[in-house]
Length: 251
Image (cartoon, rainbow, N blue to C red; front, side, top):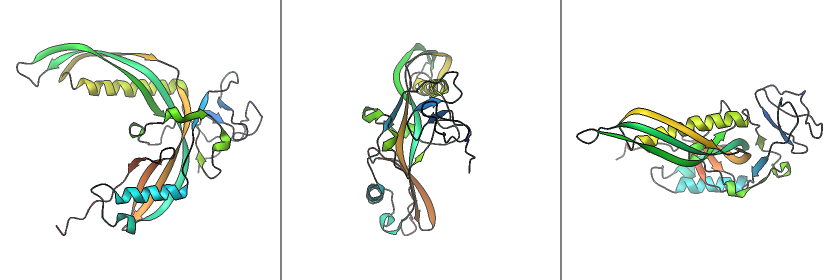
């Protein structure tokens, strides 16, 4: 278990901040004040919250409904699976609004004769960056319901929920967003050319939004094996889930 850093106090109310090593953005559990650790001058970071709308019962029911629906799932999955872990976590995200403009030159080789091409690919993004360094989360599969966000209110965080602070600040979030968006622009470029001879991307970045979103992390057991699922606590939608392989031996 990570050791808690205990000597840092909230710059607003003076309460002790429960920070783990590596966390850079702290939210006070007593007054809700959010600030960047180690900043030269105290200031409050604008912080939003996506409200959790579900409880254990509704999450369990939603998982059961998912198990009974769709294709390529064992017919007895809902009946014979056993829920082993059900945990609500509030994860930190940075939502980075930006416009990416990529200029390119290359050759389209899928037609004959090969044809030189050049052009521009421009897209607007609200790019989601997880505020944790080592954790894995399918950010591309998760659309934050940003229209439902409210100013951060710690009284709306359930006592049993796990609340994680961000390990990166807004500057690092922007750097990550630029890197990932440029990779996405390169992916889109494959529709235009097969061989790239020149590629350059410029960015116009707006102010990132710092927010916490409720995610339910679920584990279930089926025929002796453990499977994982992540459910959106705001909408109840399944973000990602492991599906046991079908047994085709009888076919």
